[in-house]
Image (tube, rainbow, N blue to C red; front, side):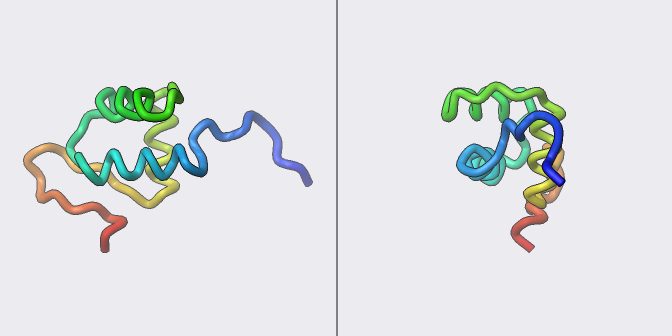
Length: 74
């Protein structure tokens, strides 16, 4: 059966760029991540879309002041 709905906005090279942004600055806010992603790729995505893409990539963001370690690095 064919997939229904809109195609993913964040996939392939855009997802790689997104994970790179978060790995470089794991305490960045979604607004900061969104701005940097748009600057680098031209893709504008809703914050929930960013959260979903990061979750699918296996990356958990951390809050500032927390022990900075990405789940994808484990």
